[in-house]
Image 1 (spheres, helix red, strand yellow):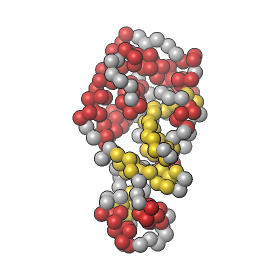
Image 2 (spheres, rainbow, N blue to C red):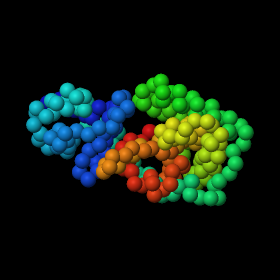
Image 3 (tube, one colour):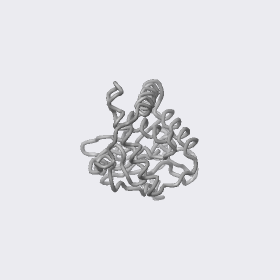
Image 4 (cartoon, rainbow, N blue to C red):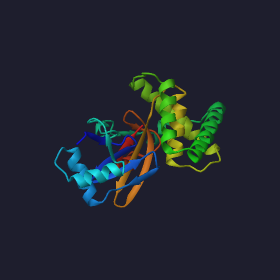
Length: 225
């Protein structure tokens, strides 16, 4: 059989032996039936699995033709959060008028994108803009300190924007705000299994920028942008 890989728009994590998927093209999280889940795990582990089950995974576009690159599997994500910028009182500061106006413009623009575009297009746009604004910038203790201060400015400005807060909206907006100041932050998606819950946050190195550390650590990363 042709070598197969996970569809590029899919990512997954394994929680207690069960897989949870994020499909950014169709803006959804899902799980497979127990039989298909076992077949996929066996295939990815290069263990023999029923051809009929593999064909079903192909028909459902879980597996597609390709090499051994299995797409966005977050096991390679090494930046486990170690601190939270929100929980360091010394980082609190008042935003300038310019920062408030910039925050408002970014939040409004991000909200329009999320309402009118699929998640994949929004995330691809975010990654593209960030790459242009922060080409090859290394993470250092100095840049981490600046990222924390910049995130504090965004959080200070955000209440002035008359749009309800939302983890996806605010994380994308914060990352854009940082990128405009030549700071490259990651967008981390995480899930819990029982009960199911999805969440995301902005992270610079090992520092969570817009969430409490304990809360972020309750989620298993499923995709990092």
